[in-house]
Length: 177
Image (cartoon, rainbow, N blue to C red; front, side, top):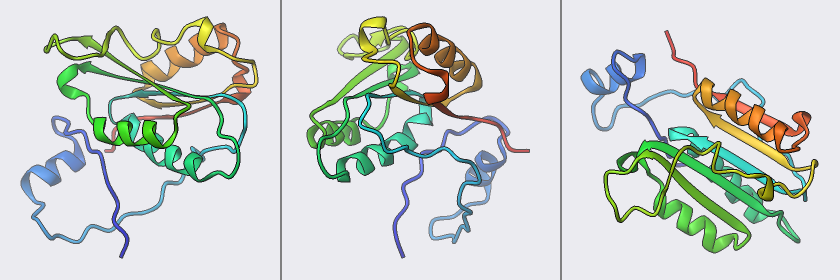
């Protein structure tokens, strides 16, 4: 049986959060369904921009692996990943591995508040960390994953910077009920 890595944010009174905190035990069998959406990597040689908020990083790690497996020249890749504080930044080892395997991957980490002065993250958010100088062409393909407000801000920002709106794909977090 294959292994699956999950990044789960524990939310107050979240359905899955409550299950994990009060009912789940090590070794429990959990049945999963595949996603029903269309958030997937589109094969393109154009620049790829990824904007992740919090656990929105998770699908991008698998997309980086898919790009690594492409034959031929890899597209230029920019990841802008942000969390509220540097304590929330995760996946650093996975990002280092991805950058090693994809030398054309530029990773930018952003935090709204630094708790550790040694953190190399930028102060701010992953949306504003992307500037006009980062956009190589209107054919740039962008992937957004995170909370609804970040998705909307990133989509608007990228369009203002010249990315074609039809080349922007998003998966936003919604709470389960």
